[in-house]
Length: 125
Image 1: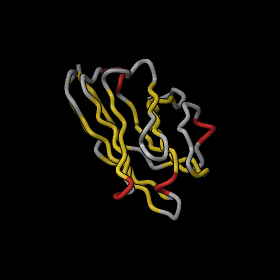
Image 2: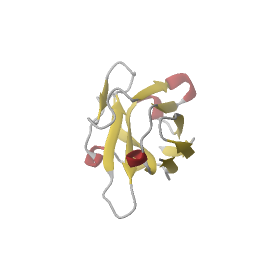
Image 3: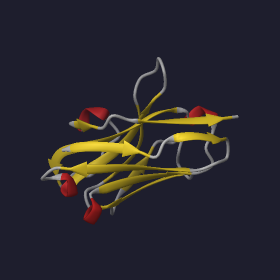
């Protein structure tokens, strides 16, 4: 599975962005997907995950109520809608795919086998 993330940018605190991750590959529509983020000098952290058909989602506590993950399997695309952005949301955001079919979506980065290149999100105060 190959992953291409886009949609990052510079936004003021309180603003919104929508990230997009386009997947290609034979099993992309049956793979659980996740979004992670990594700030400079810090470890990669879980943001949100969605199961293979979009019926189940999980979120990090820090983004609950502000971020929404969704997917469109017909377009092999996963989205991350980010509202009420805060300066502490500044990071490179990466999408990831689980190689197992019909997965549930997990908060640990060890569950994911494929990673995109990331897209920078910068929130100014």
